[in-house]
Length: 105
Image (cartoon, rainbow, N blue to C red):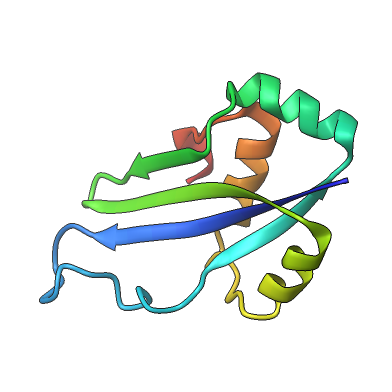
């Protein structure tokens, strides 16, 4: 089994006094568990990428980074994660087609 940490990284390009997102100091992410077979499929469709991003028309920017974890690390890290702010569908899309498309956002 493979444990994948998708960390949500966003930034407000406009409308922020500090040029930082208000949740900047929190850990937002989700851990997904894949079988070795599904992980190999994912590597092929994602071309081995570890970072995905999308810019919205209003200037908001969303991105995810990927980190492969051991089961032990995944268990420890999961306790401190705040989720992905409703962007679970984006993570699903990355896992299924290897990229973020505008249709789900």
